[in-house]
Length: 240
Image (tube, rainbow, N blue to C red; front, top):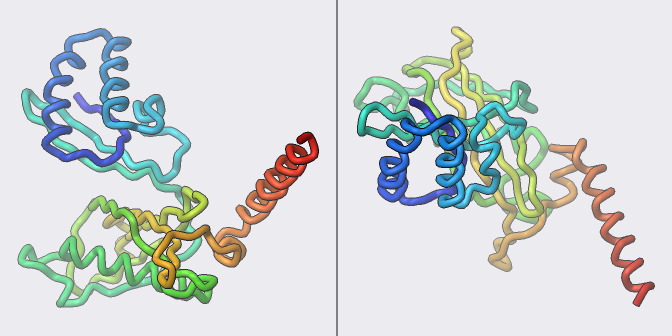
């Protein structure tokens, strides 16, 4: 039995105990009540969208899921990223001898370093640096990586990089990593980032220049939202 749920971070032991408690109920009840059990889990873990959490094929292109597979009394937690098919930018990186671990393949810690390099190249493509984006810096708030295949010394990896899930203060940087020669998917990842004023030591709104260069399709929507909010405020003031 496999369930997919979307939830915010909780200690793994806490999640495991809860899921072991719900496992028997979910397997024995009718589909309707099984869904109720799954929704109860999402509510306990403060999932922002409990209904969509039951369906991994929803429209949220960068949703983060944990797939929980039950076999007997055991539980295995798996992250599943829902990423779009198209990305804004691609770059090639070689796997070096220093990237190889004792398993004789690309180490998971080195993959994070390669993701960072890909992100830097993405920003440089738009004439930005991590500490200079319209006068602001960038700070990573969360990271998720899923591995699909091994990679070895001498492999050339193509990193596809894009942006999604914009908020007032940041967005998600998403990645798909493929073996260039074989066309095989190696890993997928996302890093949540916020914009940060390092002089004031506080988060800041996304600079307009970041929208204009990296997500121009959202700039018009942002401007419309700003105009609508301004008009609403003016109307409220006039009524007073």
